Image (tube, rainbow, N blue to C red; front, side, top):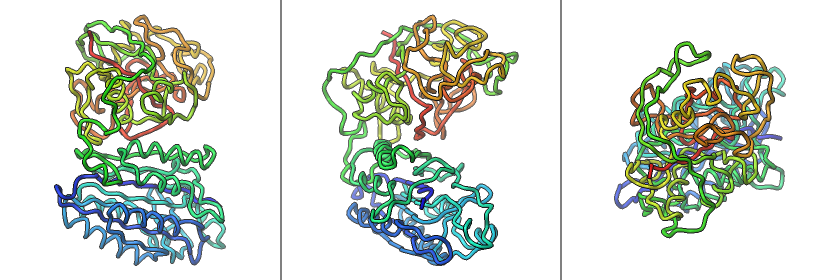
Length: 518
């Protein structure tokens, strides 16, 4: 028996000192196991009970509802929202464990009294997830919320005589979410997440989540721990991922013991230099170049508008950050494809800037970033490591070329790691699809000594994604550049622009570091 999807909506609460903010912590935890007319689930009630107990120990006022019907869920959410709305500094955590389905692109949480024979009946007899999100955004309007939803993503009606068989397998991602909402999914949309075995108290994801709830580390680090533990417990079959929109200047942790953490850097940063493998830095000369692509470039996007950019000299790492380097600095290796010389992936933008600061401190440099939880500012005069700006990245990728690639008008899978479709695009000839990352430096560098600027893994940039020529000061997505092993040749063009939420972790995204010129 499978429990599909633990759509974990981790609206993680800011660990702000309550004595200073006046805010309180509230939690609504629902665990539905004993469904009356669809297949029962093994673990949701246990998972919810254990999470509720842990939350109480962490200082939350908890409302625990086991095996709740539709009317009870509606009343509980209404009361929960009312409590949160009592103070704009309040923090919330919502967890739902049970069946969930998708109909026409919208997710529904199933109460234990669901009795439906078609999609319309399911829609009217269930609790829409968007209703919860709208209520948090428009009614609660509190500081930060924690919602954990552990929902079965298979169609629970498929074996029921006369039941709906058209429900889409898997919950869908949420395109619009309230500000300061962090979402963590227990597995990929449409994939199956394990419910757990008989005789085992918790599902794998809940077990992993419970294991790290006491951690005082920031949200992005804790999420990495949960992801790795879930993968370990499921033999790599289930990989959580995240999404969200966090903008408040707070230090995110479930454990209030981290409330006094420094806004300059997480408390586990070393204050003294340590021995680490050296970074190979290539000098990038100052210059002016034309950023973007001409209208004649095949498969260009409309946001690749050409404009001149002048840049000072800087230093850029010759290689994408390797797993060995990341593990030396961060103490973990979250990558899907394991290997010391492979690029690190499954790292968020927040992970990347944390690495930059920790690497700087380890080498006795002045950190480039002031990190206050998930609010990050850049000290542009610092000599420490940082992410390249989008303009710096394209300038370095081109290495003086105005062609689509640093290799010229064409490229091949003998020159970069990307998904070859063989003669479909005018840029390539028949090639290969490696189906994974390659060791950094497997191909010849560009004329400025930089490897893998085309393909292998996308690389995080500093900028928020927006229209040229001015980079926006805020946004919901960060720029990623260079294409990856998974995507076609057109994504590897020097001018190709892409973006992802800064909390995203995928095995197609890594990064490389830069420093100011010396």
